[in-house]
Every structure is written in C-alpha cells, then in structure tokens.
Image (cartoon, rainbow, N blue to C red; front, side, top):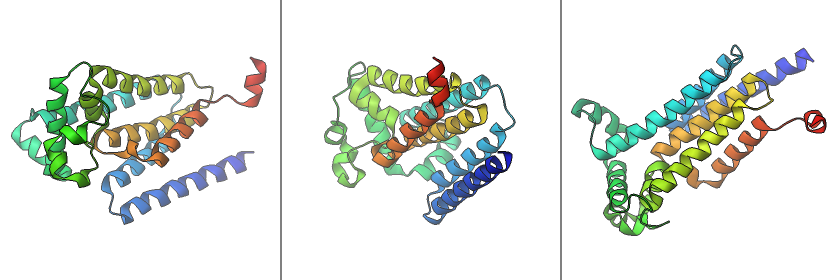
Length: 221
C-alpha cells in the first residue's frame, strides 16, 4: 500500500542518516560525504524517470576522480590546486601513488604481477603499516596488472551501470543504487575500501538487488 511504501522510505532515509552520523562520529569525513551525497541522490532520484543521463554522469564522475588520482601521482596538477588536493590525502599516500605510477611505467601492459606492489614500492617497504597497497584501486591495477587490469576494472563498473540501466526496477531504486555504487568506486580511487570483504559483499548484494527481476517477471520470460 501507499502508506507502507511511505513508511518504508522514511525508515530507509532514517537508516541512511544514522549511517552518515556514524561515519561522522568515527571521524571519517570521506565516508560521511559519500553517505550524504548518496542520500541527496536518493531523494532526487524520486523525481527522475530517465536514468541514462544520470548513469552517464555518474560514470563520468568516477572517471574524473580516477583521472585526478593519476594526475596527482604524476604531479601534473597546477601548484595551487595540487596543494589543496594533496593536503587531505597525506604525503605518504601520494608517495604510494607515485610508486604505483612508476611501476606501471615499467610494465605498462601486464604490470609487475599481482600482490607485488608491497615488495617493489620503496614507500611501502619503508612503511609496512600501509598494508602493501597503494590506497587506490585503479593505480594498484595499473601497477600490478597493467592496462589489461585497468580495462577489466573499468569494464566491471561499466557493466554494473549498464545492468542498472536495463533493470526492470523503478528508476528511483536503480539510481539510488547507482549513486551508492559510484560512491564506493570514488572511495576506491583514493583508498582501500575494496580490500574489505563487507564492502565488496555489500556492493555486490546491492547491485544484485537493484538489477534482479521479480518472481512474476521471471515466470513471464
């Protein structure tokens, strides 16, 4: 019923707000910003019926963040912009990114090999607490698996967005899921979120729920 639907939406919004407040309480500003962004996108999605433009914008946003990550690692940004961007990232993380770019240049096609970044990165060797990862999924793929790995990573995200575009679910459902998955992708560009099983499991579950057909639709096929 309409009342049940409205109450369900209210409960979902309250839960999302609780998650955002928890992120803020844990002093995780990027996670808090991601939660708030997803909440705003979810509210706006209720007014949107054509999902293609929104999904395209989300894909471009992720690509822009990935490109900015590479630009920071290459020290290709203007000095003023570079200072403001690198300040919240910490020097250590930027050095890890630069090591990843250096390794990617050595083996641009195939990479240096899976799980070898920690042994070949001078910054990682000097600081084992970094977890043997460059804190960026695209840069890790570029360093360890080359262009092929980066292409496969981009293909997975693109295929998920394509699945959401073709999903039989209502536009607000698919666009809210797309916003949440884009937030995960953006955080993965600047951190190690994909290294945590709960994050990848939750993202996969969300993508599955947002693209699944109902029982009645499955019987009609």
